[in-house]
Image 1 (cartoon, helix red, strand yellow):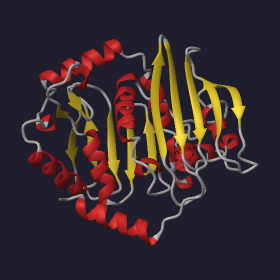
Image 2 (image 1 turned 60 degrees about the vertical axis):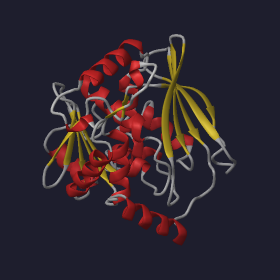
Image 3 (image 1 turned 90 degrees about the horizontal axis):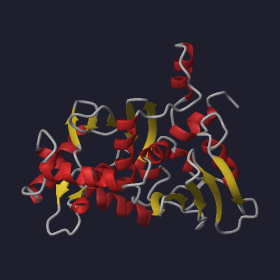
Image 4 (image 1 turned 45 degrees about the vertical axis):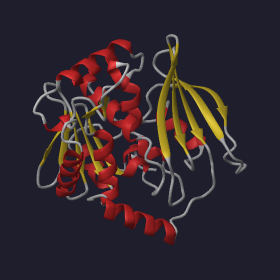
Length: 301
């Protein structure tokens, strides 16, 4: 096994690109951690797109990730329905008649974008860090964003140059009340391709819950890799985070349904569970292809 194989498994980067980093004297085996503001942006994005489901083997439609401390490049599937899903989930809009100010924004509060000929850059005004979306025609994103604005012109704050007043209030309230560590979600996003299984389709999900001062993260796959393959990528392997395995309930080798690994993150009060549901090997059928074609057609309507 080559020295960069673990990182390739986590990010989808090519062997050649990582070898080029080694030649340049950079660390091509470990995955760099995001700076605090970058981690906060990545966490907000990850928790929004994580509900995508499994119409391909690529978790959340991500084919490749190129991580740096202050930026994350994300190559998405070259399918309009994937780009449409990301835009719908991420672009912020106002929500009326809410009881809690934290719920006053749908999407990622403060998120703005800039398109070039080859990519769409996601950022928050006045904050360090960005996510660069690539792998598709950026004009798709522009068309979809325009459709969202035309549908919701009064609430679409993503067209404003700076944070709106309600976005700032919602963001401030969320930060003051949250016990979630953005670094956890950022680290999982930067390694999400490690959840790819052997089938043609797999759904990956991430969520967080809290009880008192303890937080519980779940990384769930419908047909992911064996626990023994994934755990080292998050714990003590070359791409590991220093997390510790507490319990190992793996039935992968027996081929039985459902298995899990429970880990403790950097803080003893933070638990992370990998749950492999093993719903059965999914395949892309003619009906699935027809559904994708219809979603691609609807992406611009």
